[in-house]
Every structure is written in C-alpha cells, then in structure tokens.
Image 1: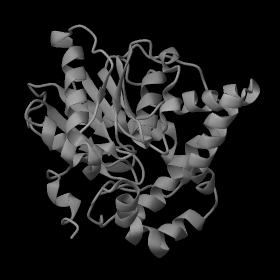
Image 2 (image 1 turned 180 degrees about the vertical axis):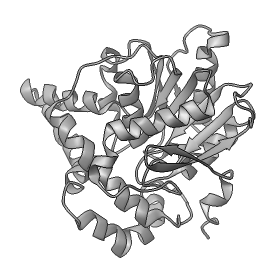
Image 3 (image 1 turned 60 degrees about the horizontal axis):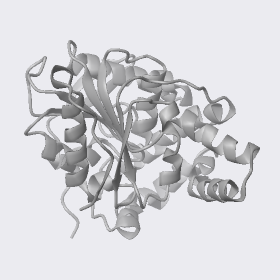
Length: 317
C-alpha cells in the first residue's frame, strides 16, 4: 500500500506574490517574523513539488525555522503559460521574493535539489542574493559548470574524458527530449503521471503517494529545460560566489553523477563535500543523514556563531 497524499504532511501554505505568480510557501517551526532560529529555505526539483522535502524538514524543524515552496508551475503555485516565464531571471526572482518574505532582516541558509539547485546556483552566481544567503547546501552543480564540464572533455579529448562525456550524455538525454514540442507534455498526460510512483519505486525502492498535481507539475516543469538549457549550453558564464557551499553528492545518482562535481571550487572557493550512498532522490530515501549534514553545515556558518569549516566525510543510512 502506498501512503496517503503527501500533501497531508505539508503545513498550511501561505501565498506570496512574485510578479504575476502566486507562490505556495510552507513553514515548519517558527511562526514569528523575523524568526528566532536560523531560517532554511528548501528548493525542490523536477518533477517534484515542496512535499519532496517533508521528511527532511520534519527532522530539522525542532532546531530551525524551515521554509519550502512550490516553484512556479508546481504544486499549489500558479503556472505561467509561456516558456519565457520559466527563464532564470523569473525563477530567481521567485526565490528572492520568498527569502524577503520569510526572513526580511537576516540571511537564510539555502538548501536545494535537482532543478532547485540550478536556480539557486544562478541566484548566487548572478549576485541577486548578495548578503541574503549565509550558506548553500546543494545536490547538483551549476548549469554553467555542467556546460564547461562537457566542453572541456570534448575540446581536449582523452579516453577517460570522452567516456565520461558519453555516459553523461546518455544520462542527460531526457533534457534533449524535453526540447521537443508537445511530446513530453503528452507523455505526462497519457500515462507518466500515473506511473510516476511506480517509476520511483522501480528506480530507487522509494514508496511515494500519487500527487494530485503530478501531471501539471511534469508538463509545466518541461519549460524550465526549454527556457534555460539551450542558452547555457551555447554560452556558459564563468562566475563565482563567496557563499559557503556544501555539496550533497549522491553516489548512485544516474542523472547527477559524482564526476559532475569535479572542479567546482572554481565556482565556490569556500566548498566542502558530503557523500551519501544513495540515488538521485536521497532526500526521500535517506532523509536522516542528509538532514544531519545540512544541520551541521548551517550551524557552522550561522552568522551569529560561525565556527570552523565542516570537513568532508562519507554518510550513509
């Protein structure tokens, strides 16, 4: 038996306005603004919604003010209709709007996964969140970094590099598929939405309930790939952030493989690494060790009590 709807585990949403979009924001812990405890803002990926963070959030809520939100087009947030509405400037603006609403006077600690990681990296690298983020824990590298990663292996080929690039092209082939008009949306309408819980169980042994918005989440989120991936592949930018960054590396992730995290110090000099023996959806399969790693990094970089850097180590469980 699959569990009941995952929305049952989410706090009651508050809706905030970002441009023309209403974002559903969920909060565990502190109700005060500004909160007394450090605020963590969790950003989900594709084709998920904020409920993917529930298990992690519940393990952190006794120590921190936890906030998650449905990105535009997902969950209970409103869904713009044009591809341009899903470009980085718009989704980065959403993230800024959430941070300004939930923690207007203190920097937050950013935690992101999958596509949430890509938009959070963009927000940090473009300077849009300067002074607003105390630390960043991420389960994926920046899209600029991924583009340069491929270019280096193709422009200066070695056998090892070409094999890595070929393997990553196979793992990322869905991104090319998402550039096709209508076909991905039809796939979600005619079976993929219904099959999604079975797919997660088959891929990683994870049991999740069907989400009532899964079809719309999948269809709308395709626009994230169309609006952002082609441009970054053609014109990646070299930028850096001084925000402390923790890499949450899922060792058995078939989509974001550990090799993609190589040389990330050039983007974030204040970098540490944590490794987990799990697949892509580690936030669902291994919430305890991931929550513990996030908590440790947050406390090490909370402005009121900054301590020595966290050392890299391997986690499992």
